[in-house]
Length: 257
Ligand SMILES: Nc1ncnc2c1ncn2[C@@H]1O[C@H](COP(=O)(O)OP(=O)(O)OP(=O)(O)O)[C@@H](O)[C@H]1O
Image (cartoon, rainbow, N blue to C red):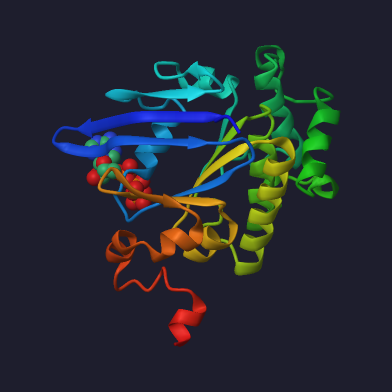
């Protein structure tokens, strides 16, 4: 399958700190790819370059055949790079549906014409997106009342409003209960595979990574040191050395042995 995203030789330094050093990888449509690494490894810097927030010092980011380095974040978003954040960003005083409608208005260019209230605009499309994440019954509720797991599902609906080809998810399950984590990742994977959306996510919870990713990439001090299936990465000696002592990469049978 041809790549949806091709990243080659990505570099970014801050003064003497090489935050990202020669990172290259590809994401296929529908692939769920985890980017892991210790604190300060360069994950956020990579994400910020992928969505145009930070310009790389060198390297190339090809999305569906088009170079996107140098484009501002809004142009990158318009070309189909969606993002969810560790801390959810919704308008608490608006209803669930209105939050999705505002994003749809922005995407379809109607935001300037809007006078304070999303009203009927893109209502059906908003409801379709809410149904996709199982939130249709909560469309009329103010966001400020939502449970955390529901907020994360709403955030996913908002991230889908620009019809993304690639979804960047920054610690998607942070702060969630174990059952909610599994549900959110299953939902994300199902939507991504059905629609052919590539998903790149960072995550500190190794259970989430090893259960839900098709492939895992490991960053250490700005460099990619491993890429493979969860089973391959878990066995990789370099990866084990980084996580040594944290016990994070050992599966349950090994821990029991
Ligand atoms: N704006 C900046 N100015 C200076 N140094 C920075 C800046 N942003 C990141 N860095 C440095 O670049 C390196 C990579 O940081 P980055 O935030 O990308 O790591 P990370 O893997 O996302 O870490 P975490 O898991 O803690 O979020 C770190 O050494 C960090 O201190």
